[in-house]
Length: 73
Image 1 (tube, rainbow, N blue to C red):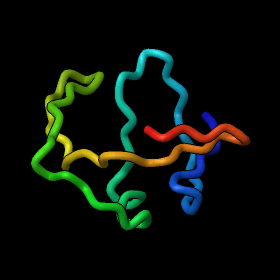
Image 2 (cartoon, rainbow, N blue to C red):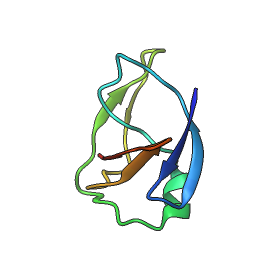
Image 3 (cartoon, rainbow, N blue to C red):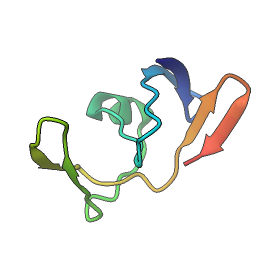
C-alpha cells in the first residue's frame, strides 16, 4: 500500500499490484475530485471471484502523485 495524491487535492491509500492493467478509483473519491466522467466509455471487468461488472465510465486524465513523482494517467 502507498499514499497517492490525486489531482493535487485528494490523498488516498493505494494498493500496489504489479499485474494491474487499469487504475480504479471508488465513486466517493471521484465525487470528491469533481472531475467529469465519460459515461459512454465503460469497461467490462472480471473480479478475482469471477463476477463480471461494468464500470461507471472513464476519466480521460488524472494526475497521480507518489512522493515527488507525478504521472498523468
